[in-house]
Image (cartoon, rainbow, N blue to C red; front, side, top):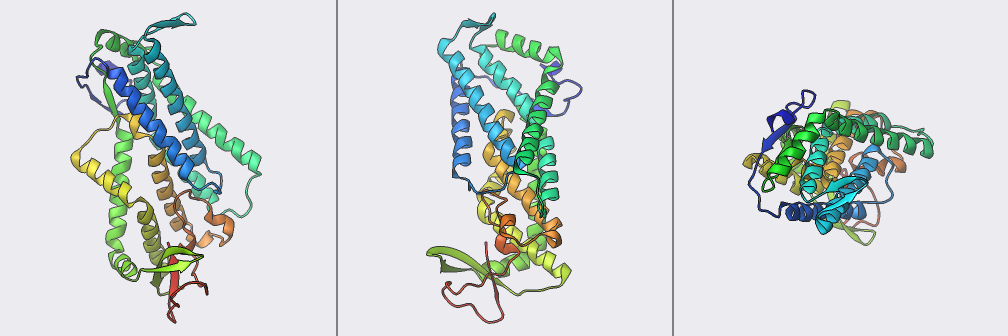
Length: 339
């Protein structure tokens, strides 16, 4: 199976061959069932009134593609051996299709992150936006181009499909697993950047966490952090970095811990599982935070600006909060931030 790595995709995967029981197809079916459930659960619980974005459309497309894969392998698993449109399908096609999807997912991490980062960097401070229909069409086109490019990269070399088919046909007890180097390196980079930022802002983060109070706002319990306002440009960016870190980790801290554990153990997750909706929304929040920090002086403090992230509220990282409905009363000379 060494020849399966084409020259255009070399270095993108680690190959691990594991002895599997006869019913490997059943394991793949159950794994995909769990992944599809998790994908649609995240799409359901996210905030609905958020601005359209490339990452939002890509997450929906990923969930639909996972659902199509689940339906395909379920159909094959149920009928076991059948012909459709002149092609014969058996149980080993379950592993074959999963491997093709896995290879495709594995090379799409960098392109998706790059397009999403450019999208947020150019639109995070926009006051005049594209017409909604034109903006949606642009995002749909970008998603289609990325998926088509990924499948084309994997399937354009005939030896990939042929060797996968031969391997699965003559090794029914084994199903090669592939882990994407792109996902692994992205995870390492994010943990390193978050750790560096926390180390640089450790005093500010500690002070902010020590000042946390639970108050009642609009009949809901909220966490409030007090900090001293500073209009200096450098100090403002430093304070903003601290608030962005607190907001980000307030939502995604368990996910960061999970990434650290996975990296520490050296676990290699199959590429078809690595790219999932929760992971993409985690990356999405990170990219939004980076965009806010890089363009903090260009951000317009309008209500529309704060409906960017489906899971993290960044509004009070920029705006002081002062409301007579909060209890207890605010101390003089102190600005309150809700994260």
